[in-house]
Length: 124
Image 1 (cartoon, one colour):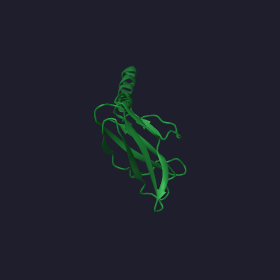
Image 2 (image 1 turned 90 degrees about the vertical axis):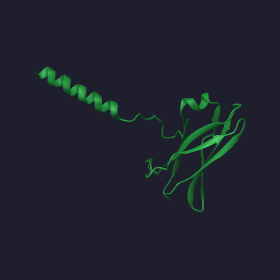
Image 3 (image 1 turned 120 degrees about the vertical axis):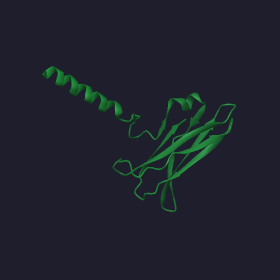
């Protein structure tokens, strides 16, 4: 009877673990995160450069499309405070279509005066 309860408990814990959302492990100094499909689609990206615009933290990153057809890329800027904690609420994801054999610049600005660093996440 005890073995049955242990097995049931382990099965329940396994289901709880399966329901959590997958995350992409990144180092704290990694400012650019790209899903593998981005490179396969012929997109090259530069890490975001952080600055400020009218006292508001901002960032930009240049993307290039090496393919003969346009590619739509989805992206989100994540902002962090001086302790490295992610600032909420998160920006909404955005999309941009990069024309064939062209480049575009992505821009983002933090809604938080305390933003100290930024990370750009790219996916298809």
